[in-house]
Length: 125
Ligand code: SF4
Image 1 (spheres, rainbow, N blue to C red):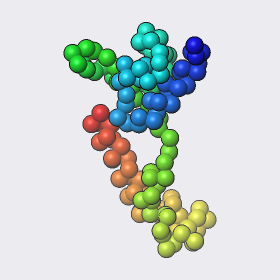
Image 2 (cartoon, rainbow, N blue to C red):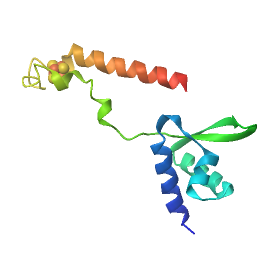
Image 3 (cartoon, helix red, strand yellow):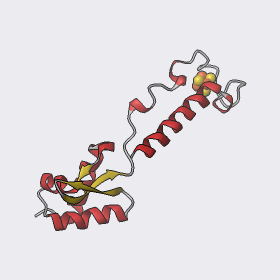
Image 4 (tube, rainbow, N blue to C red):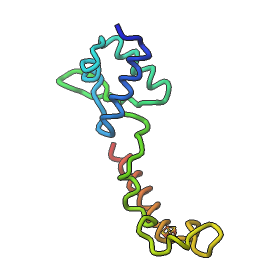
């Protein structure tokens, strides 16, 4: 039988791999081969450590929880639109130059766009 910390790590990895769509608690324990009682305990522990959040969900007439990771690993997709990647001023841009990230409108606009999108995604969930 796997140790509880092993199961915690496996559970957390599985939840993270499911990303922002989350995973039903019952589905998770089926995949990991644990009991639902043990699963509930581990989900509570992961939530207590601030690693996941649980949201109550009605599934096939029964209440369960959907588990979401609190943090997702950073991917290259998150910066693919950054204006700095294709900026013609890139070689002259720096903190000791007139052209710098501190006063760049393109970078500020991009960051504000990301922040607005993140806020609307949080509002949707
Ligand atoms: S901060 Fe602005 S000026 Fe500097 S590289 Fe990025 S987009 Fe270009």
